[in-house]
Length: 374
Image (cartoon, rainbow, N blue to C red; front, side, top):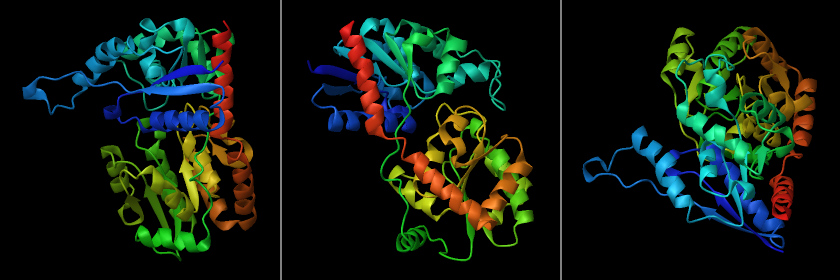
């Protein structure tokens, strides 16, 4: 029997890039390697119609109404034999689709964890009512897919989900992330208008508070005191007011560059021209950038928080995210010790090869088939 699967995706206007990466990677792998056992359909919701005088509005009210009112109504007409809600923020769809034939992938519980003070620098007194509405529905699902053991533990501890109804399936890594040749690195440097020689680069990614970018800047400032050569810190993602404030306070304007939004197709360029990825997050539900960097042959210095020890294992250097001195010393070792650098590159490439979308698709299909057999 060929199963029919409907992937319920988020609003394109929500700009949830990491969720799109997951849905696209899973769909392509299911279609490429599992087509004899399943047929995959997708549903993308439409925003709630808006009054003409406010049609250009991109405010949160329209998105909230669309997410929690319009999408459930639309989902009623799109139910498949097996439903797969691809992110936990749409868990409330379980109130309108058949929960006994529905899978939900849970990437993280950040709104709940930050409200409960579980993530440093993200404590908030405001109760996330809408997120809790979606999270509360997760117990209704026939099965949950957690992208890490860490997320699985959070589901059990903070949402009361049954352990035997959660399967851990790691994300895959896109094949575009690969080591460049020396010639390709030179071309990448030229395309980004960066010198090809004579400078060592540290890359940081993201802009969310839990990414600990202030800590990354403090560690980099200390690295500048240790390292005698020329250094540059490159950041992807928007330069937040906090980022600009810390850059100014640490006098790092001359050695930092913020690139803003970088298309995913160009990220391998940056991983390959970087000498090190610095990723000191306070929390990650999975954490793709370290694996993407390792797949490009770039050493990783990261934190030991959230899912990162599980994902990175012994292929990177892990430290407490608030240990700025330790992070700086680790980067200094990567830049100055050829033996350590070579070892990290070798272990990183081997580690990254373990995370494929084909493997994720096969395990996800097994979940679908267990539900179908019920």
